[in-house]
Length: 72
Image 1 (cartoon, rainbow, N blue to C red):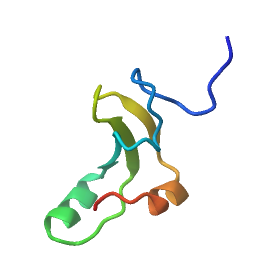
Image 2 (image 1 turned 60 degrees about the vertical axis):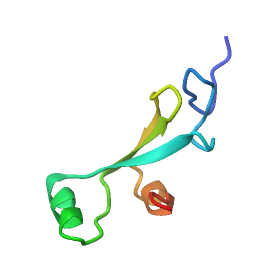
Image 3 (image 1 turned 45 degrees about the vertical axis):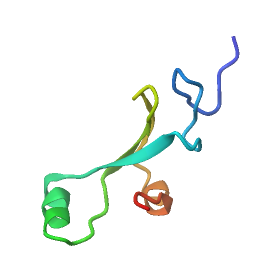
Image 4 (image 1 turned 90 degrees about the vertical axis):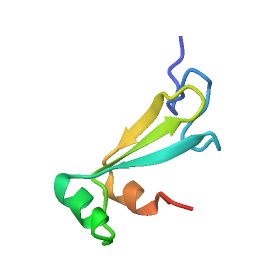
C-alpha cells in the first residue's frame, strides 16, 4: 500500500479543500490577549473538516502559522 503525501480526512479532503477550516490553538496568554482585543499568534493550527469533524492536520510550524488566514 502506497503512503499518501498529504493527510486527508475520512471524506477524502486535505487541508486545502474548501470544506476544511483552520482552527487556532492559543496558550493561556494568547487567549487572554485575544479576549482583550489584541491579536495574538496561535501556538498551533488544526485543520478540521466541517463535514466529518475530523482533524486533517495539525501544525506548529511558525512559517505555516504566519501564512494561514484564520478569519474572513
